[in-house]
Structures are given as structure tokens and as C-alpha cells.
Length: 66
Image 1 (cartoon, rainbow, N blue to C red):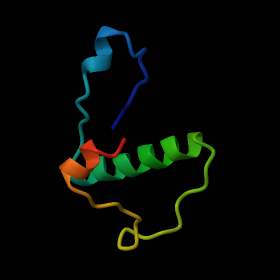
Image 2: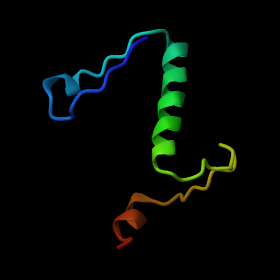
Image 3: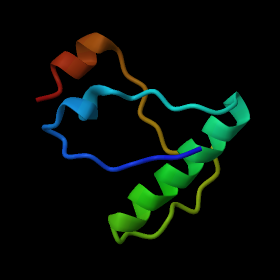
Image 4: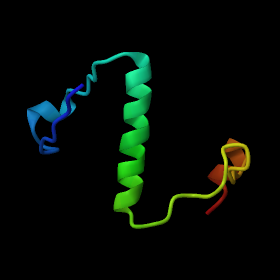
């Protein structure tokens, strides 16, 4: 599987097809997510998916959240 970096304003920036099997694409998403998080210079979260902090609210509550 190959990837390339192109300028965001280029015509090629809209071509988002990634080849490979489903398993290869899942691995790629993991690698890309870790790379992007690393670029934030923040530590990786220590929580698990089961203990991930979330805030559940209705759309109405969200609209009046200002």
C-alpha cells in the first residue's frame, strides 16, 4: 500500500481512495491516528474505549448550550 502527500488546494487532494484489504486499511487508520496525535505533542490518552469520557445530551440541549 502506498500513500503520498499533496497540497490541500491541488486537484489530487480530493482523490481519497485507499487500496488494500479491509484489515490493511484498519491498520492504516491506526497508524495515521497515532501519527496525527503525536504531532499534537500531547500524550496518548490512558483510558480504554470502555472508560472513554463522553457527554450524552439531546440535540435540544446542545442547541441551547451557548
